[in-house]
Image (cartoon, rainbow, N blue to C red; front, side):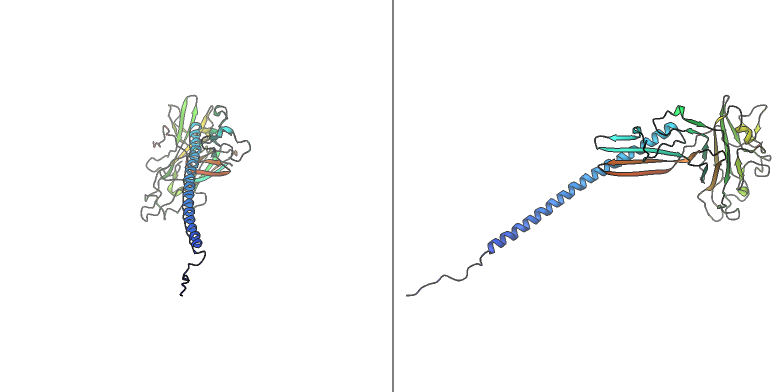
Length: 329
């Protein structure tokens, strides 16, 4: 009798379980990868939304600075952002996004010396009256500084501008390089003082009150009582005045000095060009003066995160002045 035994070709024990575990692991890995991708996408979307909110929050601080500066005028200097007395009126609360924006303005010198550049085709305006408020809460009508100028202004004090042999400022002959105008307010209206020369065909021949190409070392000073300049508007009795007499007229106020380039800052032969003509204005009586440029500082705070932005070198708008020209007679 023959006995038949089962075949020994049995699958190894546990192989099905191993395949199930491997398949589950692969499926879980795919699911986790998809979940991670979705999570990153959501986080990126949230970060993008938060970045957009922060951007517009910072923009709101800049716009507030521009608005209040233009409403008050040149020379505004509010408290710094980290000042302990910083006012709530200079904090913008964005309740819908839980973001706070603080802003401030700085447009006044910290000392009695102002240094900078006079740029080509750009008038430089310097004032002796400004809003002296510390915060936007202060009433500008009761915080006005208005001083009689006491100054000395020099040009190219460190002799950085190339000499006439290297830079002819677009002309071979000497001539006015910088013109200027002083203005004041009195009970009778606005008056102006402009440079003049004895010889209208040669305005740089001495005596002259022009700042000329070949005498860039010349200066303007409030105590100059030696050189006559043209007074505008003219009267039958008064046609000229010195800077000292013009500034010390009874009832004078709201003085300002505007210096205007009259030539290109380039050499006509070589094409060499300079960025600008350096100047230094010193307040002899130690006055802090409005700057020709101002800054806006803004800071955004949200969920323990803060970001500060500074927008600097914003040029002050130069007012269009009557009689802002020179007369030769």
